[in-house]
Image (cartoon, rainbow, N blue to C red; front, top):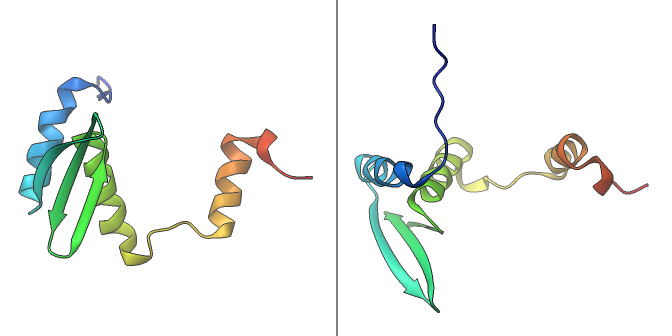
Length: 90
């Protein structure tokens, strides 16, 4: 059995955009101070990111974690310990 692999690259932008539309979001691209920004809106929720794939990630984050999507201190500590151990305070 062959392992499937998807890499975040230019070829994922259209698929992410279409998925956001399927999820009921409206999606727009704006130029903000010479920088491309993507905006997805659904009801009172607005997501902003640098590309459609990041928007899709934000939509999943909000969908799975709800309005209190932020990590708590314990989760942040576990993340830093695992991925940035040198960032830990003594």
